Length: 457
RNA sequence: GGCGACGUAGCCAAGUGGUCUAAGGCAGAGGUUUGCAAAACCUCCAUUCGGCGGUUCGAAUCCGCCCGUCGCCUCCA
Image (cartoon, rainbow, N blue to C red; front, side, top):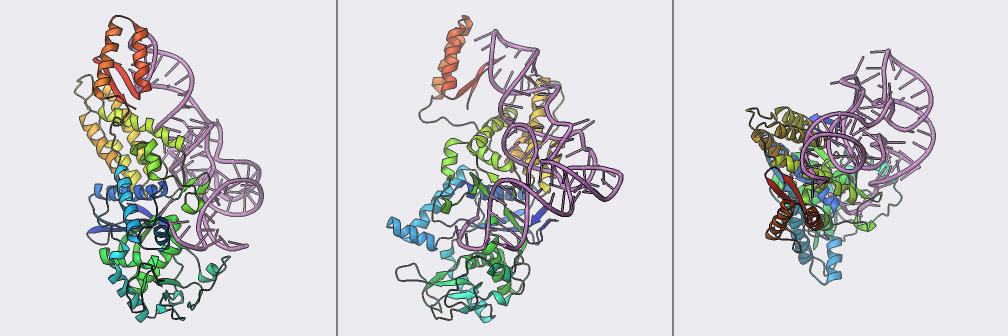
């Protein structure tokens, strides 16, 4: 499989260094409900995980939670809760959202606050090696000395000089140089805090990920993933900390970054106030439609959130569902051969996870199955293969469930029976009225040779 | 200001030197089927890839300029 790495800026053949693929994906900061941008990133790496397993690899994926940071503390103060309670609430919500999106759990979901010991070991090691130093103003914070790594900037393609050309560079007291960043933050009274050799404090954001990757995946990991907005400073800092601490390079063999979701032309983010939460999206769209919308564009491209465009995927999803459940009307002895479509699917996925092409192959297979159905060919093998390929993309092709205020299955069956009677009596006006009523209630019906079937839409 | 990405049919979106007379989805048109529909199937739907030049036997794909959109440089998937 070829994958594009942000570090080398090209596509390269990917093989895991060890027996299992080790993958670290940056998770959320548990200070708010997850939005569709988080869903995008999670779906992308979920599909990568599923595909690698489909190709026979064992995958060890770690996705962390940042459960202590300034925003969580602010939120806790606003809501009169503890930091832990806020984090717990949004972590649970994240899992519910992701379950509903059919995103599989990572192998491990570590939380920063459970990893303090490893974080402290790492900071102490960095100080010993001269890569970090306690704040010069004795505040109790610890900073990473960017100057100690002459390769700093290699991931984001920036030099320290360029970074300093940024508009604002307030030099925090206690820093030796403006580009240095905190690995340990001294806490103020009332904030969550842990004991350390430098006093009470909490870990800096970047060091958490370095420590958790080391703890659960080792000194060198195969794939590091996250949103494109994390390249700088988060991943740049994580990289320099990890390589400085372990002395092993590379920290990550492949750096994968998904393109960002935009809304009304701007990136979806809390600070801009243009959020659509995962829950909002799931309230008006099926998980399959949301996943298909994400997967019809390449993962590295930016994606514009558009409710109408997502909704059109419902119809596309239905098309696949129909093909997967179609029943052949004859028995010619011939079978629909899925092999060429499976080959196309694999070739597409092998090329830096080209899910739009992979989906195109699935749609063509669906087309072939439908043709085979009309021709009376055997569909069993093709439909089995189709379900297998579709599941690599995490699509469920499930019938929509009955909504609480909708008609029950029994109600629907009863109405269809009345309609059948009306049709037998050639009272088409009455029959059509029942059909319109069912459509209004979200039930589509189909008259076939063996009677009427229905499905929720 | 610095760094970078993108501009393909009505809409979404692959493709990045010849297999492109450009995938797939949605929408649309005609036909088969149907009491009528729906779904399905068949056929059609960009001589063209923001504009203008250039390189090349050959460019949507490379180079230059221009126009337009967007991202990062600060918390962010």
